[in-house]
Picture 1 (cartoon, rainbow, N blue to C red):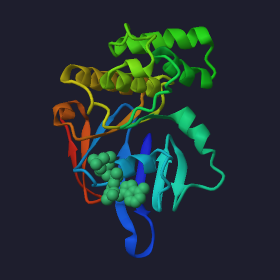
Picture 2 (picture 1 turned 45 degrees about the vertical axis):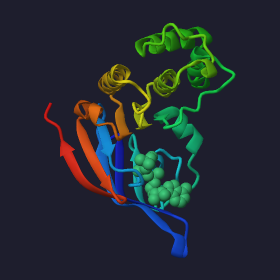
Picture 3 (picture 1 turned 90 degrees about the vertical axis):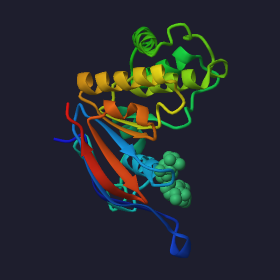
Length: 232
Ligand SMILES: Nc1ncnc2c1ncn2[C@@H]1O[C@H](COP(=O)(O)OP(=O)(O)OP(=O)(O)O)[C@@H](O)[C@H]1O
Ligand SMILES: [Mg+2]
């Protein structure tokens, strides 16, 4: 069984003469425990593919199945509770980190846990542990405005991973980080994939990080042109 199944997904922005075919007939599968990369030049459709899989951007054609449940088949399934599926099954790490400015680092992570019904004490202990594993143990009580770009990005990563989602989608998670922190993030993602049987799909330009992935899909002009299997 796959955690992510995408069958002939097409996303067209707009209509008529100005329509942009951002993704065309993309098919891929990710198993539980796999860490998979999407590589490709700017404008090739990577973010479109990720957001169309992640219930943010409605696919025009094709099928998306997440953790065994069909969520899109020629558009989103009618009656689907998008918010609930996003909250319970998905962890999203965006290019821009979207932290809540009036909450501290630890509160930004705790809120994701409390929404999913952990007690305050449980949330605090899990958030502390996660932030420490991302080398942020000394920044728990800082507000986002007092964090560096890389630190804020790591808080956002902690928040996305907090509920141990079965499907994690990350858009350039290491782009703003130095090599050491980039490697920490990659090894944390790998550990999470294996321990929680999560499927992790990562968009990246970052060739420094490529060794860590189990498989790589390359996208050009909206088309998946190559799949590379890594020997482990
Ligand atoms: N909301 C939108 N409306 C219309 N066209 C869009 C929209 N979003 C993206 N596009 C177009 O779709 C194509 C793919 O964009 P996308 O953002 O998926 O690329 P990307 O591979 O993520 O690029 P980058 O590496 O620069 O982030 C581009 O031609 C882009 O201009
Ligand atoms: Mg992008």
